[in-house]
Amino acid sequence: MGFLTTLLNLLFSQSWSWWAAGLGIGLTALGLAWFTGRRLGVTGGFEDALTAMESKSSPMNWKFWFILGIPLGSFLANIGHWNWTWLYGRLDAITYGNIYIKVLWLLVGGFLVGFGARWAGGCVSGNSIMGISTGNKMSLAVTLGFLVAGIIVTNLIFSFFKVM
Amino acid sequence: MALKKISGKTAMKKASSKKNSDSQTKRLPLLGFGALFGYFLSKSGATDYDTIINMFRPQNVHIDHSPAGLSFHLESLQLYGVIGVAIAVIALGLLLLESSGKTTRSGKPLDWEPLKWDTDRLMGSFIFGAGWALSGACPGTSLAQLGEGKCVALFTVIGILAGVWAYRKYRPKAVDKEQVC
View (cartoon, each protein chain N blue to C red):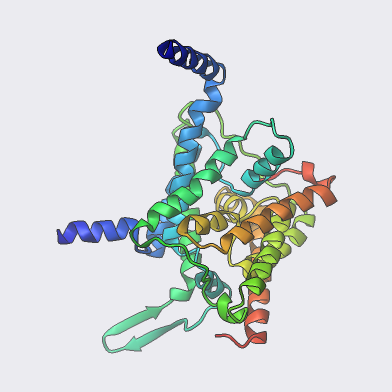
């Protein structure tokens, strides 16, 4: 009983240590490559969804089906304590607990993510994980660009709003 | 009468599934791999705003020396560990697959095109990094956040769709460049 509870907690509610989660992500990418010949990547699925929205008859690309699975998996990972929430960590303090500011903030942030991901040729999955592990120099440079901008912007925001 | 209708429908379904059996048989495994990816993303902490912020603004990172030995306080850096392990596993796995002479189960080569060196990409990477810091999410984790029940992620997802759309609209010449995502 004790063992089963521990196992269920581990599978369906707790977070994992960095090495275990990293191993899982790595094996998923390898499995996708071995079984389907595809390169793990997410932003292309957004592109597919847009294309389908614009021309109603367009068939969905493989990547759309891949990204459709992502929320299913994260749902399962937390099913032990799953609930809807409007909270979002320390961003609630930055946006003074105002939901409209938070929504606007995330719309702007998301826009930059989408625009930047296409410009950079890929997002974290395509460049930082797959690109670097296949030894691509441009993907490494792009990843460093992600980090440099992320570090600067985060530190500007958190010093400006004086939130720890 | 009813039976006839049903059998007619299934016959039609069979015919249409034969027609695009190739695309249909592939959907379920793709959905499964997507689910695995979402599962591990969620387990890694990458879907948590505060964990993303810790990666860009590490706090309380130090190593304690005591007679009992060293104790490491590197929790803020966990996402670097996650990405590092993933990269190592994939690099090693692909090397092993290549040395075995067969990189995919079907024997076909991987459908991969690496990015060519192009400094224009760097501007995009800065924009992405700024967005990552603001939203605390990247395209993959925004979808994983939705599955976790984080309502606000819906707006990140809408923002990403708008950004992808705007890039196609305002830089149409650059859209044909290779993409790794």
